[in-house]
Image (cartoon, rainbow, N blue to C red; front, side, top):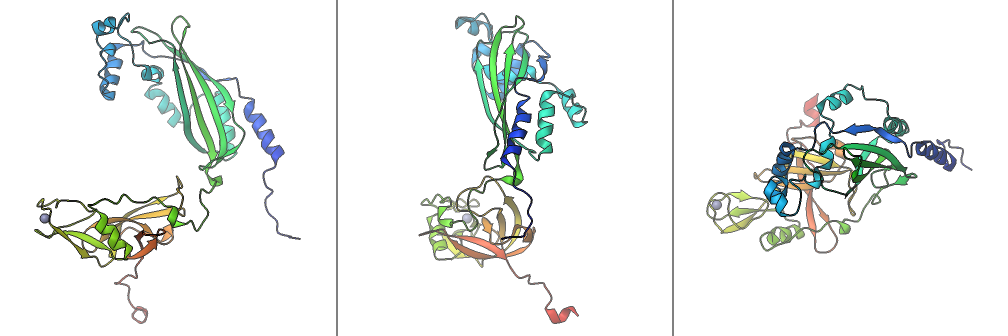
Amino acid sequence: MSTTTRPPAPDATDEQAFLDRLREFVGLEATPTRYAQDAVNQAMIRHFVEAMDDENPVYVDERAARDTGRAGVVAPPPMLSTWLMVGYKAHRAAAAGTTSDTPMARLLAILTGAGFVGVVATNDEHEYLRELHLGDEIKMTTVIEDVSPRKTTGLGTGHFITTLRVYTDQDDEVVARQRFRILRFDPSRAKPATPAGADPALRHRPFVLRDNAFWFEAAAQRRLVIQACTDCGTLRHPPGPACPSCHSYAWHEVEASGRGTVHSYVVSHHPKAAGYDYPLTVLLVDLEEGTRLVADFAGDAAEVEIGMPVQVDWLDYGEHLTLPRFRAAPCASEPAEEEKD
Ligand code: ZN
């Protein structure tokens, strides 16, 4: 019998009680009805279609719109939410922490308090009932439609919150509905996509083409090579058919020393792809020959620093594929132990 004390696992009853508390918000208006600051107008439509590169004349040309049987110019349906945007004043208020006390704010505060601090939008479904015409005055009501039971996703454990936004016009006619869903999650409780010690054979395979096959063939023999222009000597990576300096198609490969320095790096936590261990540290390495290369770091993310010397290492990705990765190299300028005293 174990005598170790551990924090109790979250109890199913607690989880149900928490969900019941969240579900008290279902059916409530999330935020007060929002009214468009401006009626549907040609100027805003023109800016929108120009930004979207949408050439459809029914949005800007009265005659073209009438030729299609419409009463006049209409707004592009995806512009729906732009009519209800709150403007910079509201963003300043949010930044100053003076947002209003609404059911949605209270619901989110409960989630935040329980550690569900991550947020990601997962669904946005629109239903358009009629086109909007110049002069329409739009308003939007938002109702909290559903709070899901606790779910564990690749991002973390959390609850999906669904809101239903109903858009109506000046005559209270419903013109559109929008169902918007977010996941509020606890990032510290993510479901691992792959166990530690993931099998590299499951990793993404590179695109091997005629222009870069030589590089992968060399890597399969654990040789790091660089493509060199036969006419002007310029080195290039990634491989390509022509020299970027003199445009010559003549090339040969040169052996790289495998030594370099970290130019930059990223530590990837999500999304987790099969075959990789996370956090995954990916380096941008300046090889001492002068070209730059992207490769995994074979070590702990905490060890990596920009400018750090690295040395090539190799990883077999199952059969027929071996790719370079890099590990920290002993620093050449480090004084020997006896010189330190
Ligand atoms: Zn050249």
